[in-house]
Image (cartoon, rainbow, N blue to C red):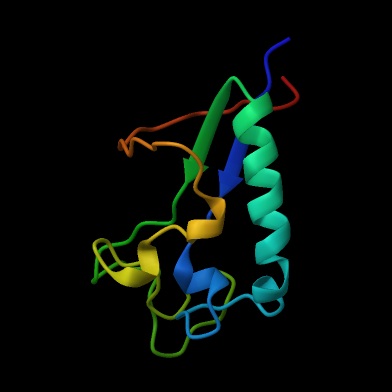
Length: 106
């Protein structure tokens, strides 16, 4: 049996208290993320990380965000906030830009 593990947006701007778009409570689950990541490193045949990745002038950014279609600047390419949190990283990772299309319920 093959097991695919997808870690979604485990980035400092979301997961660290000083992150630009901090998700309240995410600091408290970092140890769980670390434990799960270690287990998946042993069980999963493939591990994928998704990353929110923006340019500085992204149209999603706003000084007055509605938090539906616009947000404050976050996860800007090359900044510390765009980095993955260390608790989510297992083994050697290879970062590649790619487009994946998932069709669910087809």
